[in-house]
Length: 86
Image 1 (cartoon, rainbow, N blue to C red):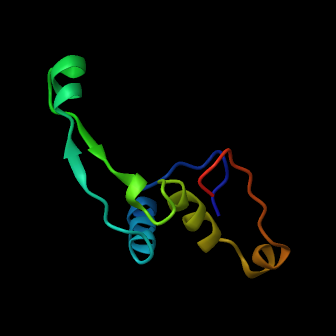
Image 2: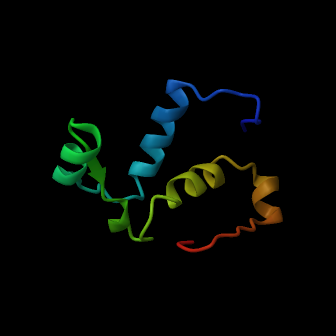
C-alpha cells in the first residue's frame, strides 16, 4: 500500500490499468472542435467517462485502492463519502 510520501511509478499505473480494464468499460475519446479552436488553438480531446456503468471516472481510483487492501483491512470494511456518483 502506498503512503502519501510515495511516488507512483509507471509500473503502478500499468498494473492499475490492467486491473481496471477487467471491470471498466472502454469509453470513447472525441475531439472537441469548440475547445480546439477557442481555448488552445490545438487539438483537444474529451474522454467520455460518463459512459461508465457508474456514470463517472471515480470508480477507477476506488476500485484500484480496494483491490490493494489487505484481508484485515477488507474485514474492517470500507466507508466512502461523495457528493455523487458512488
